[in-house]
Length: 379
Image (cartoon, rainbow, N blue to C red; front, top):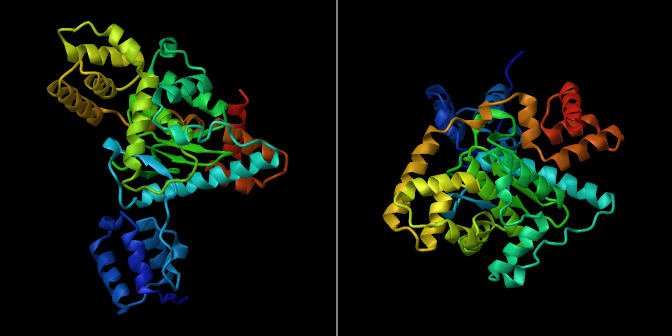
């Protein structure tokens, strides 16, 4: 059977290349072919175009468009290292946000259908965002967090799961992953983002980049939850968001590292670096976050803060990839929002949605995976 050549719009092809961060993986022959497609010297076959689509992680249907598609609008707020402004999100981030948005929209419709009310704490401090201590007090009240709550937890993972459960209990979906959906060849980059938030009054969703360190993931979780109390609308990332990021950081720091406790513990230790590293383990935060807190409280100087920063960066580079541990199903259960997963499973069992739709929402391949997850959530 002869090959079928596809007449594609070079402008659409150029758009696809510019919206992908995978073109560096093209072989010499693939690159040569690409140049010919762009100049229309040669038309790609259907098979070539499908392979190219997978190579650059752009949906095949986009390449067949006759007109340029509208650029992806990232209607979310996402947290980066040092609050850096990212002008152009990668395809990995775009695809992750799109996947999470489908889940959020499904949960929104589900909750509206069962008569749920909008979450009462969304935007309660929108007009009084600078009342930091009142926001901190409200977060502790909503999540039922006494000042020394962290003492009951032995490690960072325990704290993250505890906070995730508390946040889910008040109606917010919490998801995490270290790769794009199930694709282990597409790891998420914390240099681009650590977390993001999808706003919605019925089913807001927090996503945590699982490539990050334990302490950083905990900080991001509270940071994104804080956004829900001080905002009411979706956010497109602009430089104007930086002020909000700084405010959220200050609130999160006080929730996780209360000033009154830090000052009480500080006794002018001879080894300031060792003291901060030890106390960070107790508070279940990163040593860098605690160092920043003590620096802002004028207890350590900048060279000490910089030293802890360098140690933290080196420790992160040595960190073992957390996504490589555990079974497929344990990882899947850990990454999914429990509230969301149980709602999808129950809706499927009640015949309200098709199994194929459930598989897509849960990012699982077949009925066996569905049944295994169902059993795990019923344990």
